[in-house]
Amino acid sequence: MLLYVDSRYTSPYAMSVFVGLKEKNIPFELRTIDLENGANLRSEYVTESLTGRVPTLVDGNFSLSESSAITEYLEEAYPGMALYPSDPKTKARARQVQAWIRSDLLPIRQERSTDVVFYQPSQVPLSAAAEMASRILFRASEALLAHNGDYLFGSWSIADVDLALMLNRLALNGDTVPKKLADYARRQWQRPSVQEWVSLKRPKL
Image 1 (tube, rainbow, N blue to C red):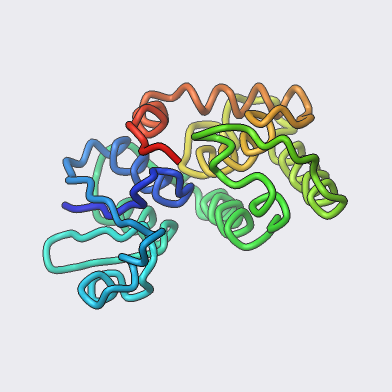
Image 2 (cartoon, rainbow, N blue to C red):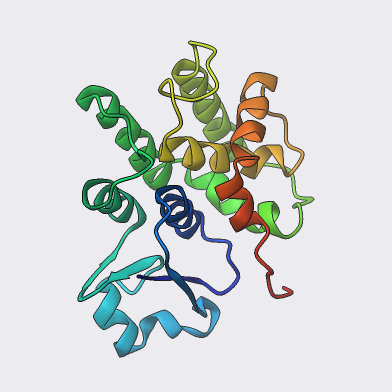
């Protein structure tokens, strides 16, 4: 199995799939794509990825891009550690969290790119729009964690990784994050599969 990721190892979506493969204990080769130089737009890569984005997973003669589609495929096709809750309603909620993080909160994603997580913090204060997005993020996260458990849905799921990374865009940058949410994100960050991604050697900016 082959996983294409960005050459700087900063894509939150590549990280999500990397963690999923590690949790499933599936052997795979990691191959990088230089997004800065447009390598993802070359025909040979687009042929495999279809969307020209990272991550892309190649499993034999089957290839798939878009991170949540990949982790759902891994869950259905491979045994081992569960990436999603088994209950249909809870699984739907986990997928809702993933879809929301990928499609909303744009001011946070713009002003606190994952460079602040994997390289260096930003010294620029959050804009009013990013502050508003942060309040939305905190409100929803607090509702999801109202049970005061360690994980969103009783036991670990891939949605915990995705939500923790979104929170850590702020927490690891030194922005104000409610303690309960900062502690939750910190716990998820210490998971061995997550630390494997965090510890990858990155090129200098």
